[in-house]
Length: 159
Image (tube, rainbow, N blue to C red; front, top):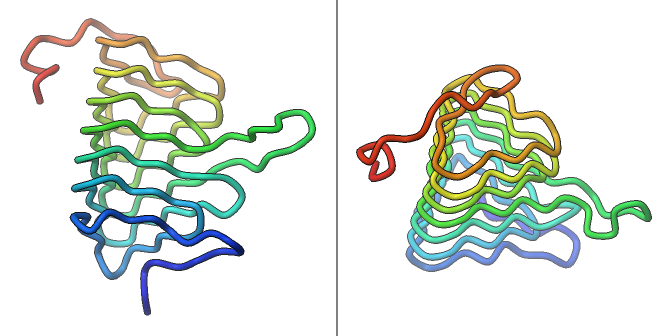
C-alpha cells in the first residue's frame, strides 16, 4: 500500500530528496522540505489542518504527528509546524504545536496543542509538554510535566 495518501482536497507535498519508509503513513495536508526522512511506522496525519516539516528534519520510528481542527473560537486551529534540522525521536507524539530549528525531541515525548518550542532546545526522553507552554531557546527540558533544567552546552547545541 502507498504510504502517501490524499485526504479530501489535499495531497501530501513531498520533496523528491525525502526518504519515506514504506511502512509509514503520510495523509492529507502535509508538506515535507528537502532531505526530510520519515522512518518505519510513523504517522503524519494532516486531515483537519496542516503539517509542515523543514529541511533535514527526521521523524523516527512509531511517532504520531497530528493537528487540531479550525473552529469559531480558533479560526486557525492548531497546525503542526516543525523547523529545520529537527530530530523527532522514536514514539514521539506531536499534536498541533510549533517546533523551532535544531530541536532534539527525546524518545517517547508528548508535546500538546499550541505549545511553542523555540530553536536550539533539547527535550529529554519521556517528557510531557502540556498545552500552550513555551520552551525557551538554549535549554534542556525534562519531565512530566516538563521543566527547564539547565542551559545547553556548546557541544549539545552542535549535536
